[in-house]
Image 1 (tube, rainbow, N blue to C red):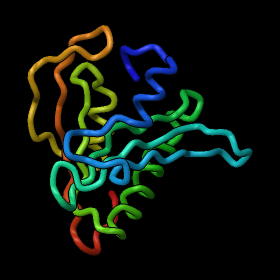
Image 2 (image 1 turned 45 degrees about the vertical axis):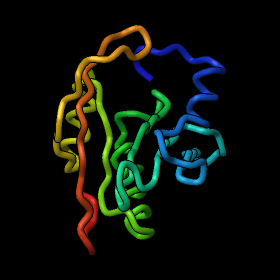
Image 3 (image 1 turned 90 degrees about the vertical axis):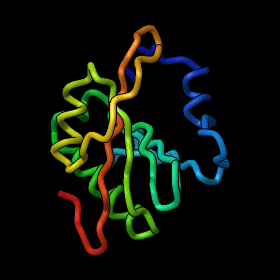
Image 4 (image 1 turned 30 degrees about the vertical axis):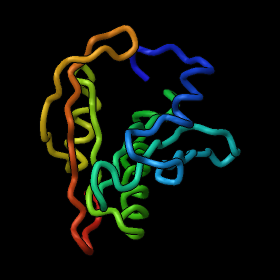
Length: 143
């Protein structure tokens, strides 16, 4: 994650961090594996947060060697189809303002900016986070 060095604490936090009022069964940590079986990415999701039917995508991460090959788009599309099939009506996420490439990626996938949150310290950087969402209509398919 930008601005943070890998550590055991960061890994533990990824596995256990939950927003207020959510339980462990609401959190999904999904691994992405290459054909040879090695972990090349992950998705961190909280179901029904901050409201029923809304799934918050806290993190979608791919190993650098796996990027810029269309895998991120395919991964998100597969995730969206699966989430919608089991009840998701909206996907929300947050992007750091300085991460223009990620912001444009999510825009291309149909996410719309909802609000900009006040600056907060994330790792060693102060960042403004942009809340984005994508409504999932019945029978729709990802872009």
